[in-house]
Image (cartoon, rainbow, N blue to C red):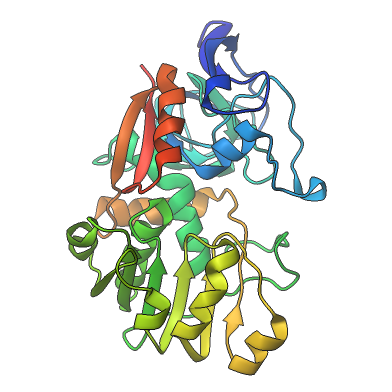
Length: 337
């Protein structure tokens, strides 16, 4: 069992990367149904810097409860240090990975030496996969899975009233992945290929060889060509960038096709209906059972996780600065000594 205190990254005020402090914090208390994890690696995700900034662009009614000081982060890989009452399927010493408490809280507390979370948020880490790669896959892998393969829950999305329903992918489909070199994108590309689809990958210059190695059939450098002008009649666009410019990809989707913006943008329902295109989104949720499916794909080599860069936990500020520069290839990971 750990001591009463641990090292963690906390913020006491909202702001830029400089508000991230490496300091002592209480070890979280273990409750029934939970696991206490000795963290080995932490995946860095956009919600981490949204939380750090105080979510300024999120409407108040959509913000989860947050209390300062806050330990950010949701994605971890580590070893079970203790098991709460009522937990089955996990034992002390097991290597596990998971996305914690998302989206019910942005206080996943992952930037720390120890974390607690419901056992249902975790899956066993594949033996041949490092803690760094396991931590890198959690949120990004679940996002790609829930958009493309199986939603896996019936919780309403804050982005739309209707539930997201992934289309069935197969050998007759063409999928365009925008932001294909990033955390979600490079995993989504591989999942679409696993299902037999032809994949068009859109990314910035320099990622072509990387994306073709992952299985992309066509790569578009958006710094040279506008993908929505180059590609037509695809069955599905997964826009991993999303936001206000996602609407431009309506040009690329054939009638009867779908457009999935990961970060929901601005669309006109009447225009979508006139074009015969389904525009739908969702919000990723913690799901240990789906992570177990992803773990099997990692173990047999179907899915590979790219790591852009690694930083020690105490250097989380530098990790956030790297994220702010953009053009990531895969994920940023924090390592915990």
